[in-house]
Amino acid sequence: MKRTAWYPGHIKPVRPGVYERWDDNEYSRWNGVHWFGLQPTVEDAARETWIEPGEYQNDCWRGLTTKDGK
Image 1 (cartoon, rainbow, N blue to C red):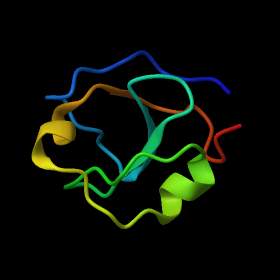
Image 2 (image 1 turned 45 degrees about the vertical axis):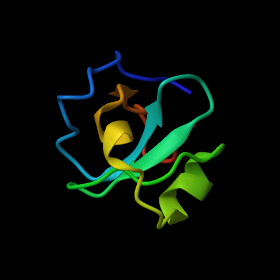
Image 3 (image 1 turned 90 degrees about the horizontal axis):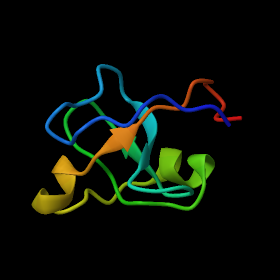
Image 4 (image 1 turned 30 degrees about the horizontal axis):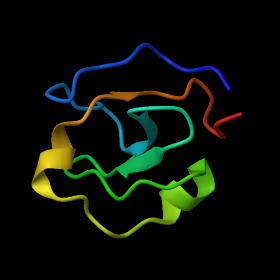
């Protein structure tokens, strides 16, 4: 799976979707306002409904370069 460069947590994604967080194989959904809990797969992250606590809202992230994450 191809990925973008890492972004610092104070910069938020422009588009809602699933992004990689901190290290390989941890994904989180961004809804445009909040990050949702970490999951081991893109598919699981897309379904996640638990919002991460405040401190985790500013963790670094990077984008997946294909819509299906492959």
